[in-house]
Image 1 (cartoon, rainbow, N blue to C red):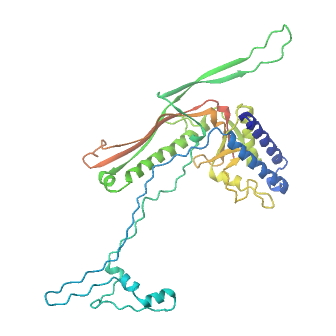
Image 2 (cartoon, rainbow, N blue to C red; image 1 turned 135 degrees about the vertical axis):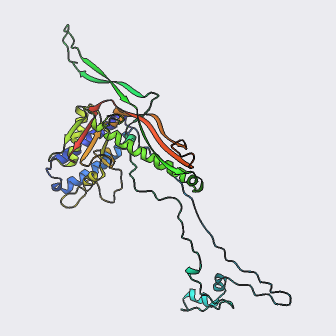
Image 3 (tube, rainbow, N blue to C red; image 1 turned 120 degrees about the horizontal axis):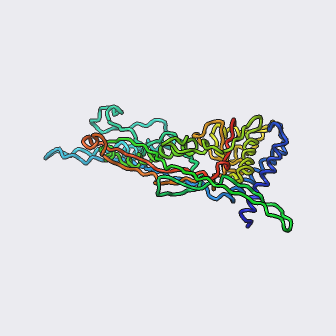
Length: 402
């Protein structure tokens, strides 16, 4: 089994080879069928290699779910004979319509297709036509609640996880690196290198939301409490996603990656989008001295990349029947509508970004709000505290005008 370093070198080499194919064309639509086939094959190879070198796969967070199964069964009922008094013959038992049909030879012939019409003799005294207006026929209630459409992806899974017991994060960032190493003649002075460090401080921030509910609702509707807990937790995670990417750092906001000074920028210009992404990867490698691990993009922007075709209709990123993972140049692609359209982010998320959690998502229930206690109302609150540390800003590069 090759070492991790060897696998990374192999992946880097294949990325470079694929880039050389794209570099031959000013317009991908003019790509030859042979080169298009080569692009597809090399991208598949990089996908397999990326799976081996990824340090962590995406962790799926399971939301609280509730499913209440409501089933009803109707059992045919036969009314027992009624006693009409001494000396009187009892009234015959009344059969259900299901029983009458089951015992009918005509109905059997109707089921077999040899008879088109069936006549049933109803018991004496039955004169009223039974319709839906004479019976309270309740609607069938489906179990559970149908959630509104919300995106569930998160960039936090791309970063390192961490915990803290303080309200601030302090770490040292290497901000000066002077490599003076050189060959030295016998007896000559050796060149002096230099390293410089800057102390960085990140604040732990709180994300929270709540909603009110009545005590009767929580008591009488099965599963509603767990449903509310799950949805409130989801709301917190959505805001977390936006803060990690776009937070402006002004209290009480987190300073997101895209708003940090020192991250690099690659304008698309006249390049095809895949070329601009590769150039951003190169900047991360050359200037940031880091190996990019993922690309974050808006779903609408990724759609344009995924649907790239040659002039004769060959999809560059695989046929529609290919259901493989979203990748480009071997990088994991994370689609989220919480990054601005026409902007992408290439980065070495691991190991140069880490999410520190002071607390996980905590859901609390209380009546201690306003007049809730006397009104039988409940406040349900979800919150978390976290901070973001970025150890090397140049290990990230935004791609504009994609």
